[in-house]
Image (cartoon, rainbow, N blue to C red; front, side, top):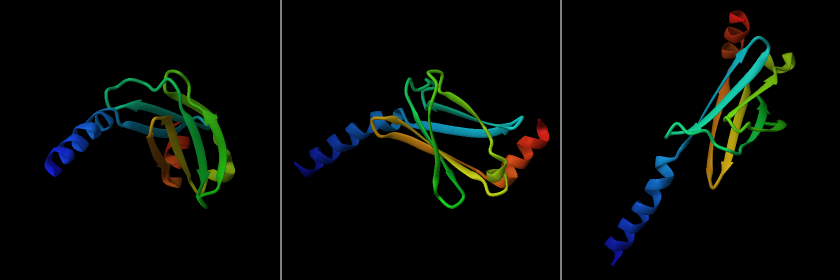
Length: 111
């Protein structure tokens, strides 16, 4: 009985793992570009994007586009300390990306 319950729990968890959300963010030409997609490659149709400063304070809440992407201007005040970008697409799917000051500087230099 316990083994059957354990197998059922593992089987129920498998679809969630198969559709894990992946988030990537980078800086280009003074903008932060956020891209989110499931491990299957499909973009989420909905997503809430929360942006946190280096202190962990939430500074913005934005909506992810239907293509799984979002672009917003980089506030120069946050370029030296970095940002954390968190995306939640619902049904327990979420992930985050940390933009370090070095990542931001590289993106600004490339643009």
